[in-house]
Image 1 (cartoon, rainbow, N blue to C red):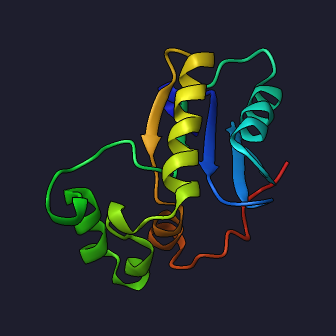
Image 2: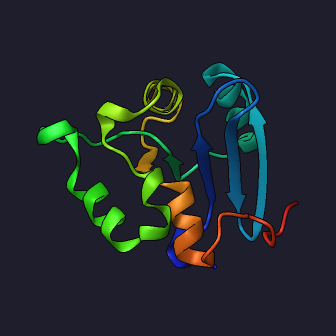
Length: 144
């Protein structure tokens, strides 16, 4: 399925109480849940990986910044133009809420402390679901 990149991949969608999404992709299997905090997300990831080291983690947070007006990043501008159906989920950094911006970055730092070589990637889960399946609803994934 992944060619040379087979292994464990983690995904995180920071949110508030019981709304911090966590996921692990291992081969053809996806496990997902929700937790409360960055600490809970970190514990979930460590437990889910066991003794194996993940290759990469995608986090719905700001890992890259821009200094233009409102901090609007070129990648966000392109996504807004390409995926008009979900453009309201792509906003300027100055308009974001704390869980995504602060919790996501805090998790990125914690993940790098645990696994220094981990590849971190910024994600847009709603845009990804729309781009891949033309819908937000994640039904249809094989859950293990």
